[in-house]
Length: 533
Image 1 (cartoon, rainbow, N blue to C red):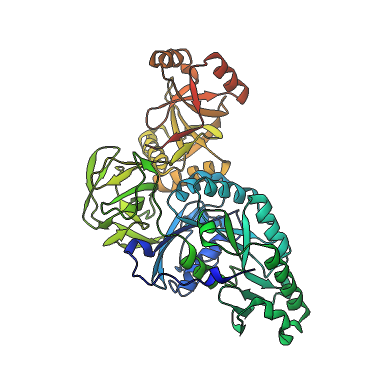
Image 2 (cartoon, rainbow, N blue to C red):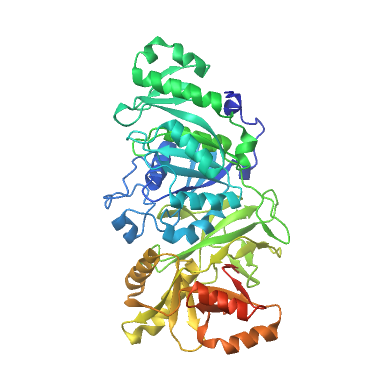
């Protein structure tokens, strides 16, 4: 297999500031090692001195990519964290996304803000359900993916089987970049096909080479039967798989595969190097009436996430903005296209997990946090005045619908505030019945309800419970004929609610009931997604 494309030199021309940005997400099934890999990437870049395990690091302040208390208790990521760091002349914006399927909507919105992704799979389990779901999201947006086959220091599937599974399940071309020498208790090290080095299990260089074909002729290496078998398997992989091609990778059709161990930092520096060399610079952003080119001089960006109460002592509310073009400077005024109002950005910030620092300037590809008091929502576009709207940031119809019950009626105003804030974050969707004043929440999974209940109690001191309704699903409705829509609303008011924007939502008792209503009202459109605005 030809590897010359792997080692192609970067252009010598001095890049523009935005061309030095690499904005990427890490996606995986829960427990595949995503958060551990995040921390080890930060350690490999020199951004932190020590990477702590997800569990049991209560007294460490190394990265705190999982900063919410419930995340630390359960050892999972349920919010999207942002970490900005520099390495080898590049600025990396790393978005650590929720792995749990119950938070896939937050992950989807986060993926609208990245130009590349790292897909982490457990070599013992292969591609799992949530990994596949997130990959499909990446495919919809043509996001190029580097695959990190994790936990090679444990027993798992054969490397060839992993490559076949990735190729067959995802319909992608695959090419090995870092190959394991043994695995589990027999793990001896790796072959770095880009750096042309053989590394031991600690990451120390055993020898350099110019052509991987020569490794099987190295008597010292093949004296170990485990290494010999691994090199023979590598030879089969190289003979049967395509060479790495940068354009094919960036088009989302080929994934380079790196075998390693996040926990032991095996192949983590090689992953960081590959992201720096191959991950694309900021790409044009889908928008109306035209895409936004990152080279445009005027500033534009969009809110892909809102997070309230990151600092419980200050009741803060941060809008995460992905810059799409221009050079942003602290203190400048930007227009919220949705409201038509200008806002002065006085205290923008960069993030390092839970920690933050003032952002004096930023360019396309950067993620900037903007403190605000409810003036910015997910999906908002910010510009220097241009009437342009970023697209592709939807709400999804909830799969679980529940009525909110307030334990203390005196706290009704606090509950309204809490539900409004968390709906703006995208944690939950909130509906009000057209008949009756009950709050109804819609979520993708049960864990979202637990998080909602815990956060409302901790952050707003409002105890709540949930009750089942005689509804299983929700759909936004619309109609080209306003009179027909009004007639439907009048006839179906008992089954209708309004979302936070005042748009009508039909609550169906079952899929059968929804189908029956669609048949009875053929002019009414029922939508499973709704563009954020």
